[in-house]
Image 1 (tube, helix red, strand yellow):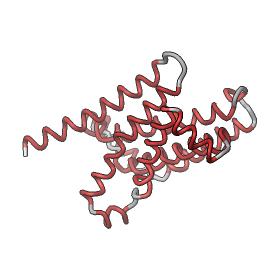
Image 2 (image 1 turned 60 degrees about the vertical axis):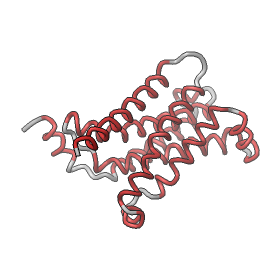
Image 3 (image 1 turned 45 degrees about the vertical axis):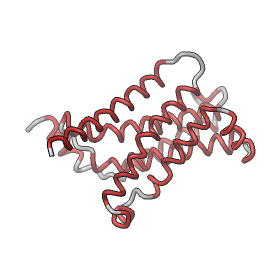
Amino acid sequence: MSVSQTINGGLRRVPAWTIYIVGAVYAVWEFWRALNQIGPYLVEPINVLERAYGEIALILLVAGLMVTPLRKWTGVNLIKFRRAIGVTAFFFVLAHFLVFAILDVQSVSRVWTEIVKRPYVTVGMASFLMLIPLAVTSNNLSVRKLGAATWRKMHKLTYPAAILGAIHYLWLVKGFQLEPIIYILVIVGLIATRYVSSERRQQSA
C-alpha cells in the first residue's frame, strides 16, 4: 500500500464537519485572547484580531485551491473536505469584516468611506462580495437547483476572490513583506495549473 493510500484510508475516517468545529474553536480562542490582551494581542488587539481572521481565511482559500492539484500530483484525496474548507474560509472572511466594521471603524458611514477611500479595503470588499454567493450555494440543494455545470461556473469566482484577497493583504501591510507576495504567487500558480489541465483535457477530447 502506498503512502497516499494510507493517508486516504485515515482521512476516510475523519468526518468533514471536523473542519467546522476546528474553525469555530480557533475563532473563539483568538477572540478570547484578544479580549484579554494575551500574547500578540497586548498592543492594538482589535487590529491584530482583524489581521488574524483575515490571514486564516486566506490560508483556507489557498487550501481549497490545493485540493485538486494535491490529488493529481500526490494521490492524496481531500475532495470531501473542500466544501467545509470553503465555507470555513468564508466564515473567517465574514469575521474579519465584522471586526473591521463593528470593533474598528464602528460606523456604517465610516465603513462606506473606508471602502471608497482606501484601495486595499475596496479590493477586500470585492473579494468578500464574490464569496457570498459561493457560501450560500455550498450545499447539495443548490447544486440540484442550479445544475452541476452552472454551479461549477459560479464557484470559479473563488479564483478572483482569492487573488483579490491576497492583493488586499499585500496593500494592507506596511513596507516590503515577503509573506503576501508568496500568497499571491501560490494562488496564481494554483489557478494556472487548473487552467492548463483544463486546456489539455479539451485538446485531448
